Amino acid sequence: QSVLTQPPSVSGAPGQRVTISCTGSSSNIGAGYDVHWYQLLPGTAPKLLIYGNSNRPSGVPDRFSGSKSGTSASLAITGLQPEDEADYYCQSYDNSLSALYVFGTGTKVTVL
Amino acid sequence: QVQLVESGGGVVQPGRSLRLSCAASAFTLSSSSMHWVRQAPGKGLEWVAVMSYDGSNKYYADSVKGRFTISRDTSKNTLYLQMNSLRAEDTAVYHCARGFSGYDCFDIWGQGTMVTVSS
Image (cartoon, chains in turn brown, green):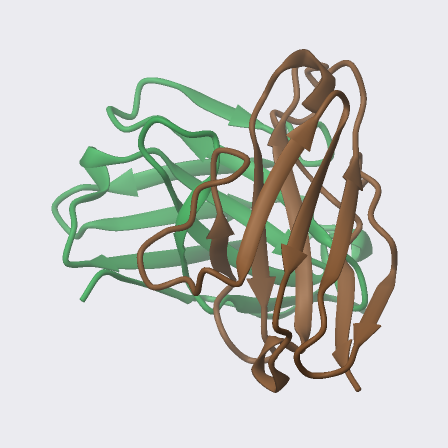
């Protein structure tokens, strides 16, 4: 029931820059709600990576950055590191009543 | 250290019930909204339910409404998810997560507990 659309996978060599898009609709991102990003590593609890479109919690490296425009948002990873290989999900609030909080379809980042 | 630890998962037959627990450490449940989020095998994250910080409001995803109930015991600082009339499509890892004050997102997550609904 993912409402936000992400590319299934992106890849890059160490040190490169990769971006992950997150496309929503008028009931979530387009309605002005914030976009947040999470990193999922196997066997560990999901980690909040970006909140409020572009803010990093303490401890998150500044190579992670987020932006939002219209009905879409993006996560950028600059200076890709091997430890960045993980699944990434965007998330927003939705006013369509079927689910208050919606997630993206998820993107697997592979470090070549 | 702020932490959430889930328990109570297992294998259950369709139509049966199960109760998940989420023990919180280093913060009180009554200070934050609390959520359940699940991830089916090979699938993405799906929000399931939320309880407001004061316990007065509870909301559910349509997929579980009428079957799941979120609750808490403040004396034990533990969050619960009562799951009734379980279906095969409820098979997933269930995470509890803390609502991040001022933002509609989740700042602390547990590692999750696996629920398998199968005959």
